Length: 331
Picture (cartoon, rainbow, N blue to C red):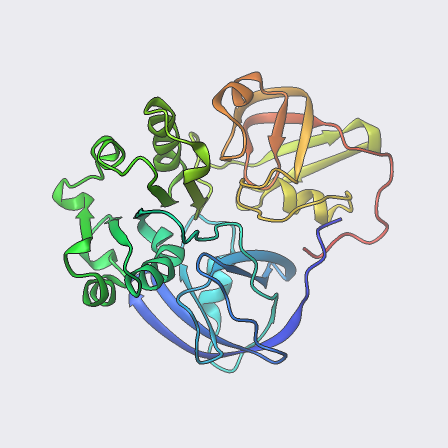
C-alpha cells in the first residue's frame, strides 16, 4: 500500500500562465493551513483516463496569505498529470495533502549555491527568497531552454540582483558545474533541482572534489531517461500476475491499479521506498532515479518502480509477500 497521506478537499482559486508551458495554480485548502517550509511539496490527486493517481508538486514561495501555489509544466509526452491540471478552471475541486519536505533548506552554512534547471526553479525560488532576506552569502544559477522559459526570473532579480545568474541554452549558455563547485566555500552547501543528468553530474563532481555528501542536496523535477518511454509488460510470479504498463504510465501506477501492495512516497526516484527486486529482464532497463548509485544501477538487480522503465519486452519482479489487494489502490 502507499504511505498514508492526510488528504483534504481544496479549491482551485486562480490560474496564471508564467510561460507558454508553465502555469501557476493557486489553491485554497479547506482545512487548517500548514505553512510550507522552503523546498516543500504537496501531493495532488489527478485523474488520468478517469483513474485517480497522485502527483507531487513543489510549493512556490512561502504562501504567507494561506494559499498554496504550485507551478506545473505542461508535458506533451508526460504521464498525464500536467494535462489534467491544465484542463482545470478556477473553482475546480481537488484533493490535497499537507506539505511535506524531502528537500529541506539548512540555515547554518557560510555559503549557499542554488542551481535550477527549467521547472526545477519551483523549490529553488522559495529557498532563494528566504536566503535573500538573511545576511548569508547566496548565489542562484537558473538555466532554461529559452529566455521565455525563465519563470520567476524577474522576481528573483528584484530580490537577488547580481546574485542571480540566468543561462539560456538557445544562446549556447550552460551551467559550468566545475566552476561552481571548485569556487565554493569548503563548508558551503549546494542545492540543485533539475534534470537527472544535471544532478548526476553534480554528484560526480561533488565526490571528485572530496566534498561532504551531506552538503549536496538535490531534488528531481521529472523522470527523463536514456530511452523514449514505450509500453512494456511486468510479470510477478509470486502473485501469478502479468500487467501491461502503458507508455504514459509509471510502473508504480500500473502495480497499484492492479492491486499489488506497494509502499511509496516521493514518486520521483529519490526515496527508494518503492524499490522491488528484479528476477529477469528482456530488454534494456532504463534507470531514471537518483536513489541508486551508478554501481547499483549497473547491477540491474533492483529498480525504483515510480520512475524506472524497460525499453523492450518484459521485466519480471518479485514482491515481499503473496497477498494481493482485492481493491486496486487509487494512488
